[in-house]
Length: 210
Picture 1: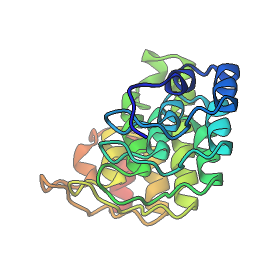
Picture 2: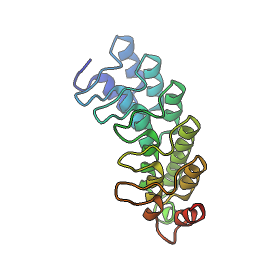
Picture 3: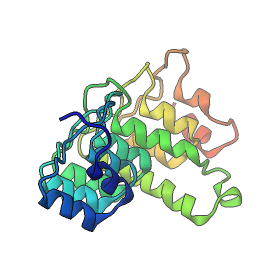
Picture 4: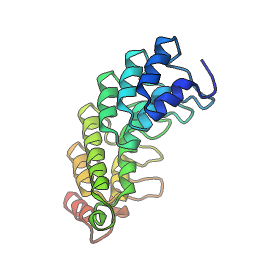
């Protein structure tokens, strides 16, 4: 049912597992949606609250619920780079290729990688950021192994375009290994390689595959 943000939403967002367990035991609806169609499972997935994700799924949360933008909990888990949440959602049947009202889960994982540039990360960010990049790579690999369409496009942008914008050579190689089209053009007529730095590892990677 539709509601303002419920206590279930708040407990899921904050990772308050015991409170969430008590709310569910008391009959609270795990599929309540806000005015923008966000469910508690969206909240928990976006914030990497894996234990809450597990509890909500066991209580009957809709694994492929869509918010007002068309994003599913799996999209949100990929956006946050939460590998554990991605695994949980996939194990409960989350669709890796939902209708493209918005970016796909694979798009989200690759877009999030743009938050840290691996070419310079060691000098500008800490080890936590590097671990985050590795988690995003693993999220992408999990999605691809589960059958994600590597060349799915939103506004003609593929996951490979986003990996290129992130200048993430490892992610570029992974996507190409699974059939990513290095010649795909976005709505600006640009190929993925057009978004890389000419001297960077990602650009060298594209030179090899093109």
